[in-house]
Image 1 (cartoon, rainbow, N blue to C red):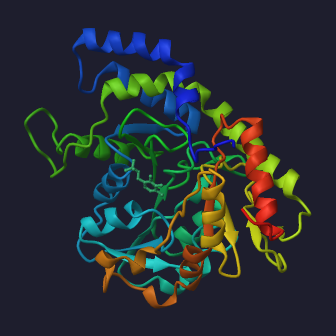
Image 2 (cartoon, rainbow, N blue to C red; image 1 turned 90 degrees about the horizontal axis):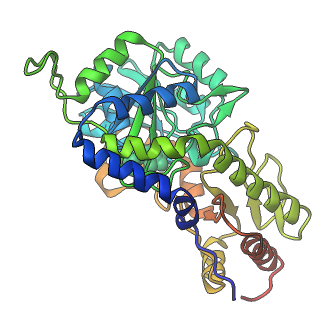
Length: 385
Ligand SMILES: *Cc1c(COP(=O)(O)O)cnc(C)c1O
């Protein structure tokens, strides 16, 4: 039987191995391991790719959220609107600074933050909104901007899963006061360990973030603010710089795989698309409403309480799949009694019961994706594993 991992990094990293090796040797022999021209060159290339004025390499995607919050002065008692259905770091970064997460419900079709619910939950202490472009699909960036300026909120875009995704031609990470992404190995631009990137169009904010990245120090040993060590290694930057030009082709391959699933499964019994009024399907395929998403995940909704059965079915057929995410953030143990809005994030709770992500990585083979599609059709038609 064919096996299909949820993600296989080997073919992508193997293809560029010779370049990584010579770059590693160069950096090692330079003995320059903190900051410097290799990091700056990578930052410049990222800024160009994302159409932003400033790109700042940092230690992780999580720190790429913490640093902007610090630079905007968000702390004790300040509220931040964020989706209740996302990876932990979105809310963790807020809570860690003593700020208060406001749990906003999400849209069942895009999986992204529901701005109507956000509007209901804005309060006098609300300072910022932290939308997440989840699974590689951009939020409606126009609506986001209108919302934020109407309520005078800062915007920090959590684009950890969506570097390179666009909305009507506009790049994610380019409209907020800050954008943040991650180079965690499973992201679309996956690195060799932890690192991340902060973006901004604002010179003063960029300057502040750069200073906070090095313990709030400027000049050397004179500390203006209380920062921390949020630096990205130049070795990591140099290796990612090799990979960066390939990101559009990786994203394109992912979109091709998503398109394949749609074409192959269109009209199959029990399978529909995750749009309003989808009818009585068992499995709903994710839709790229932005048309320019990057498919970090291909996340199904499995209805009628059948999600765990499909997971077992695929596992039995040696197809990798994962639940992103099984518990909405306001239901996490560490957030019991924390934040506002937990009583009305119904869609987030529903999605946690329904979602299942299946392989969509760029290098999946034709046979592998065929096997995934066949298996989804078999399950929806009621065949046994
Ligand atoms: C991965 C991720 C992060 C955190 O990135 P790390 O590099 O793992 O710290 C933050 N938000 C979202 C939505 C993510 O998927």
